[in-house]
Length: 128
Image (tube, rainbow, N blue to C red):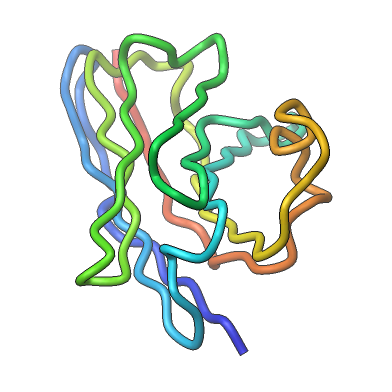
């Protein structure tokens, strides 16, 4: 059974940075498409970023492009989300997710329903 554990959330001022980590066990991140999603109170879950199975491709939601970077360290079986130039609207619970089979289109990876394994989430709060 794959388990994902996020860490690194916290309170930061606008313009600051945080790095989230997602440590996996029971499955290799190198064999999965690993994604980050976020959900703010009263809002739907939003796609943030995904890194492909090979690690050669990354995709981002429009609201975080140019500010966030997803990466992974296969030796640590961990995926990261580097968040720079944070804004108050980035405040949300951030969760990582894993999928171990391919999808027919890239846009499908943006859908949270396509991911079987989820972490418990870590809260990010950005103050103005």
